[in-house]
Image (cartoon, rainbow, N blue to C red; front, side, top):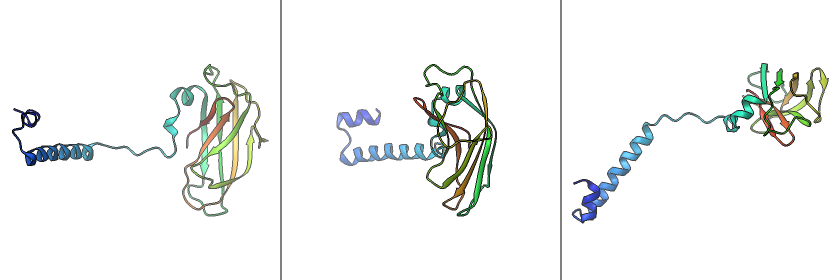
Amino acid sequence: MNAKNLIKLGKLGKLGKLGVLGLYGMATLAMTLGLDITPAAAHGERSQEPFLRMRTIQWYDMKWGPETTKVNDIAGMSGKFHLAEDWPRAVGKPGRAFFNVGSPSPVFVRLSTKLNGEPTMISGPLEIGRDYAFEVKLKARIPGRHHMHAMVNIKDAGPIAGPA
């Protein structure tokens, strides 16, 4: 007979029932501690649907520096992105888009943003199938090592984050 049947038949006393429950608890705890738990992403990189990350914007030649900043240090992010020709029908078209920098908190002040060499501080249209070069200059508000992303916010589609 197994422990479950013994409990059903009432052959174990109250102490025996508690012992069986204790064994179940210890087994559960041992399995929990034995599992390999990977660290969570910083702020939701993997929370976006794969078709958003893979079929909308391809990011390349990304540069970011410096690795750590003090208050009032100047940091920069530059790179390029391509708006895929095979834009998903379920995602709003980039007729009104805003280039942004994603961070877990307001750790930087934006000094300037350029798309293809032109100053850009407001939203505007982006063309599907085109490549864009970007450059952002930021000033640190909080010292430390910060996890940042380039991102494009698209009306009716939301933010599409690039690599860190």
